[in-house]
Length: 253
Length: 261
Image (cartoon, rainbow over all chains, first blue to last red; front, side, top):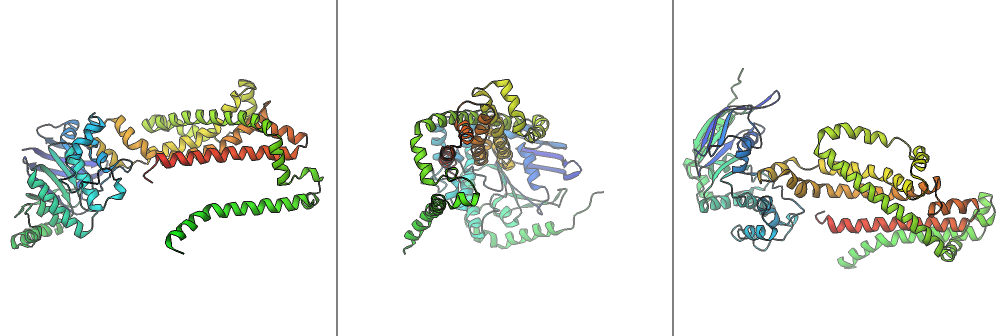
């Protein structure tokens, strides 16, 4: 297992955010995490990435348990694109390389190699403010990929986009992952998005987050998104997930 | 009017309107002063109320004296601002990097500003003599505060998400500072520095009043005693020209540095 989580608990002081979560993610598997908003999905993702330390239990990425070692193996993509406005699109994408001490020219050369594939050719020197929402999100994803880390941790990557752009970006990400399989943990509040992009979807309860259901996706990252998400088996699993989401939370005494 | 012309006209208005207002004010002043109306209303001798034309001729007639003294004051302003910038940035960065330093020093720095500079200026004179020293200290004391506060505020306003992101992109503490926090602080820092630039001439002039033998402040004081009112006004014009040029230069620098706003 590439990611193994067992007996995981986390709290901010008195506020319990995550309770007794056990979870494994295989290599090159895409795992979706869905749950009601404010349930602690993002906290779980930050725990996996090594941005937070668990209060209880263990998280290991590639067999390594310490926060620093997890951080070294995870590329985190936050909800908002958080592109730095003082850098060009290319320099934003190359941030991880620059942080690792690569020279400006070499970092740019390596990041620029991916711009074409991401439909961003010609926008290398544009400031982020001049890019559309979808393009900004692609630059943010590129920045995550360029870091070259084995685990991608995506926190509601398309939540800020309008419905049409979001569907396009899902299809685009599916294509990118088909071409270049990665181990991914994807947090989403959108059941359809999670089921389309992931191999497996875990439904979390309201805070403190615990696992209430685990579902296999019928057609992960199918080339034809619209057909895939309207197929009968997809709709059935989606309803199952929604049902699990709507269940009243079992209150732990 | 075409849309382009409208834009150009709108842009032009931003210069034209204040210039027009200034011209009207100077014109009215000229009429009121040269006709003796202003002196009459104030109940003073005519020569105590110089007209703009008289001020302008004094400005030209005393140009070398004014330039000499302006150079003294300008040096005090620039060196004082440089000290304020160095100290202010150092304080801001230290307080940003260490919570302990911030908790310990911030309330004291704020409290230090409640001490009127008028009170400590004579002491500074005793300590630092009559040269440029006490003026530098006074300018720096007045100017470091807005720089410290705006710098610290800018550093601390960094999006916590951006810091998390940088950590996950293998950034060191220094790289987070250099690539995220410092650029993020720049707009706020420029605002604080503009306030400092406006305050600096006040500090320099005041330092010269308390103890000085040259500078525009000193000239204003002696001219006042000798009822050289026209030259006094001329010195004021030079002083505000210095402040305006400094603010203009700063605004220019801001536009070049902060390109993302």
